[in-house]
Image (tube, rainbow, N blue to C red; front, side, top):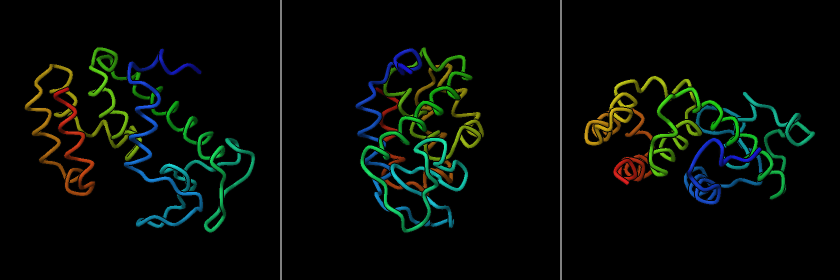
Amino acid sequence: MDITTLTSTPYDFIYNNLSSEEGVKHIAYLDTRGITTCGIGHNCSENPTTDIIGRNVKVGQSITTLEIQTIFNYDIQKVLLQLQDLSFFKNLTESQQYVLISMTFNMGYVGLIKFQHFLNALENKCIQTAKDELKNSLWYKQVGDRGQKLVNMISL
């Protein structure tokens, strides 16, 4: 699928930034919540890799760079399709779209839509309110530098 129909944010920008934010892991591991994770923040427990790369990756098993990219492409396509449910998504700047992409990648679409005040502010182009809503969230405290980076991107 050509993601340019789903977002104006360039694929390389998304890939490079999410790789930096999530990290790239060639060996599956248990994250801080006990979830089997591999590649670029892929939740193997919720989304087994069998249908994506033809095998189920378990803790301690390695994956190739090509498998990481294949899994990432699956994950980012899923994120972008979910974000189409936000009627205003395509009207946002590339940077604002990326903020929603990153947040959805990090906590899932169900997690993102809990940020109703933030999303309403972003939709109505109330930039300072949107930034304040993120800064005042538990998520912001949990994600460290990523949160500040994304808050700054809302203005771009």
